[in-house]
Amino acid sequence: MLKNRAISNIVAVSLLLAIMFIVLSILYIYVWRNVSTVSIVQHSTSSPLVITGVHFTVDAIIIDVRAETSPAYVRYVYIFAYPSRALIDVIKLNPPIRVPLGKTVSIPVNIGSILGKISSKYVLVAVGSEYGSLIAVYGKPIPIKQIQTYLSKSTEFVLLAARTGSGLQVDPTQIHFVIINPALDTYQFYYISGSTVESVSGKLTLWYSNKLYLNDTSFSYRYNTLGPVVVFVDPYKATQTYTVTIVDIGGTPHTFTLPKLVNNPSEVIADYLICWEDLWWPGTTAALDNYIDEVIRVTIFVNGTVRIEPIHGSGAFLHMFMLGSLTEKQVLDAVNAYASLNSCLKGTEYNFIVFVKPHGTEYSASVSAQLWDPNTCTYITVPPLPVFYRLAG
Image (cartoon, rainbow, N blue to C red; front, side, top):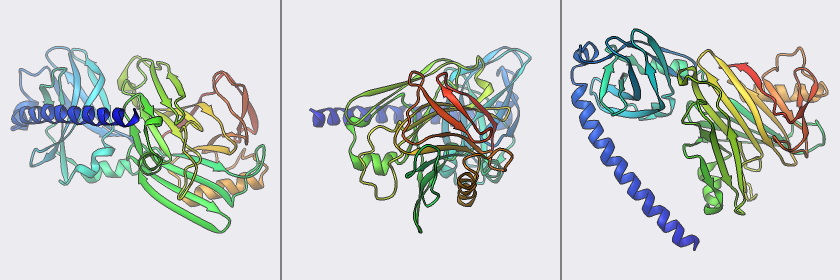
């Protein structure tokens, strides 16, 4: 039965990919023809919109769009190579962003994941309507090095497990941790056992469906393809309720609901649900059964604020969640300080540790437990689920 379902899934995916290829080919031809003369498109009197500028944050490119002649919706962002005008990527905005007449709206777009596809030194940015037609092109080519400079400072997150001890104890020689960068689709993993240190890097799994069926996957797929962390990407950028379901290898579904946070999608760069399998490490023989050892919602706002909401945690290991572009040494220094200062880091430089789940505990919106805040040296009773705010970068 599983084999037949797998064959059906392969056929369905192949058909979907074929349809997507045809649609993108048609879209490419249409857009390529329309972008042939940038200055004409940018200043066309028939276009309701003008791109007035492009600037950057640590996690996104910000496109400023003004409605000159009538209100309009922006549904697509196009990235072209320059000067070849080859279409590199089409980014769909969901929901579309409305630009009122006479107003300028800033549209944040994460293009870090497509940098590897770009062979040119410059790109052009354009926006399209709900129907895919080109509305406006920014006439100034953007240097790739400028984008890379900003994205090199993009927001990273660290998930760390202490494999031995009880309560809040951490032995720095028995830990493993993963540093993830959703903006660049990368992870760096470190496993420490005594004097042995193993590290591995890879492509972070960004999941654009709201369902993950682990019961249809092999161990090899979970280990090699999914890796230690799956990051669900909320396509609505927190503008409406989004529900994610993970079906574990035993067939049990685990559902997590992300309530609406904002009305305007231009306020949010990205809304992620980070799902960690804490038994993943190089050479592990664990089943990698559910990817819900930590489930954390992180919302990155255009104003530089990151909202962090731990939604579910479980398992025997102590967990730490950190925010910041951290090196291996910075993480290890923080863990050593945590161990030597009896879990209390108040007044230290290590306030990038956001929260700690003690050994052997489980928490959720319906399961009572206590998380530890090492910055205030106090316990947080869950539920209700706590929310932390930090600065991006």
